[in-house]
Amino acid sequence: MKHNVNTTANAAAVTVAVLYVICRLAVSLFPGLSMTVAQSWFHGIELGQISDWNLSVESFVLGLFSTTAAAWITGYLFASLYNRLLKK
Image 1 (cartoon, rainbow, N blue to C red):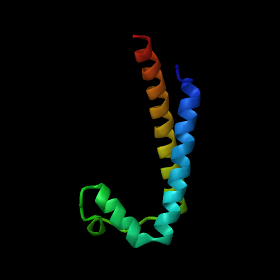
Image 2: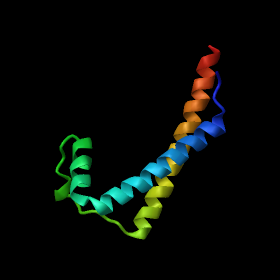
Image 3: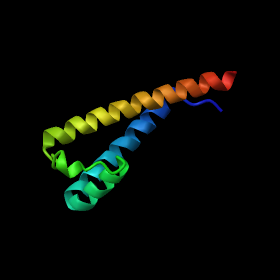
């Protein structure tokens, strides 16, 4: 079954946008737990030594835009490659 390339890209972008907003809420509500989780995702690097959370509106908008765009591109590439490989 072929993927509709634009639909797959849109679904990936919306999914990441929703997860980004949930993550932003989690960071503001549970900063300590969020730092622990982030540190565990980066294989134990001491993130607290690098920086503190930046919860500015500008940072949120830039992060939301950039992750959503990256997800859309990833979804588009995934569906395109999937469809191409399906034919072989």
